[in-house]
Length: 459
Image 1 (tube, rainbow, N blue to C red):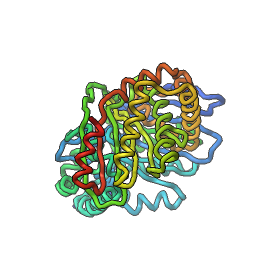
Image 2: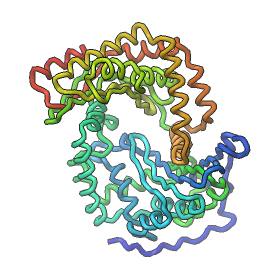
Image 3: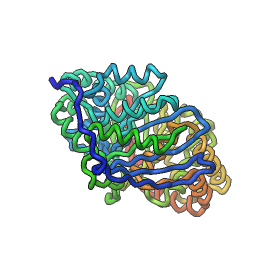
Image 4: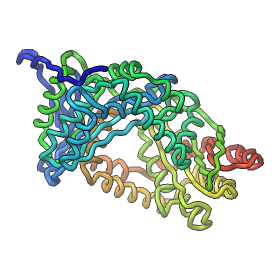
């Protein structure tokens, strides 16, 4: 078993400390909302947003790796690794990591997606140095001991079981598989029972070393902070771990878009003894870099983004066929999804699907009214601002923007792009997206006769 004893790394000489490059990406008013970026020797990027009016700070590290970077036999490795980075380093045990943040009332967590992973801590501004030290230590000094891998395997299998016990969640994994098939985007982020059981400490360590070097990472911090101080603390933590030795290294860029998703009319049904049938009807959407994404956001909001949306009104308010019904979009580097979810009684599933399909077809052919578009634009602008009212949301925005787009957009610019969407823009994207033949995923207690009829919903 590997020891947790401290590792001593020689401090680099002044000659070895190559110059970092700092830019102001967004100039805020009076320093508020100012976004700055420093690229350290070794390829590590540090992006911050200053908000002096708060007393908290959120610090996060984004890794340019997600479940789509896994081979079939490694499915679940990214999420497994996320768990293991909390299990101990050469300087701290798992208890030390959690106790350090608990002692100052901080919050620490992580999440894994299909194209990135994020580790973060939210603390009082005075405790930011502690948060930086702990999170950087986790990212650079994780031990990934075999004993920890074996113990955590049980927790991950329980997480998979918990997801499978929630069909309203599980149906979205099924829909991804329906749309993408058996490739990385179609496989679940958590992995499967078989793949998780097959993962070994050695394979996870190799995955860690490959994807967690500084060129694959973005540090993001927002709140009552000083950019230069954050950079100094981050640089010291990474240099202490010997992680910035390759001064010639350059950050990797955002994922490029090469894939065109082409799928239509696929149906996947999963029989479960549930009280409801859980349904997702959808089709290919837009990549996250597509300029039409602003119009698609307005379309999505008007169709299924709130209580005044078409789907909510038609399915729930007028007919009472479902409690939960909504639409959503998912954008990846090179493709995307548009989906409509509803949970309803199994006996009502065909009625719900017919209403949803009729609404999608009608909007594809005739578009939305100007009043619906204006209301959706106002709703989207308001929710965008309200969703950025805490330091965690700000950290997420600047970290994801640097990792996924390689640039930053101010809130005013975002609001301007939403406000600039025209009715013609929305109608055009509705024809392009909703005019495609949909695919369907359903989880529920479906009888054979019902199941055979569901294929008609996508004909």
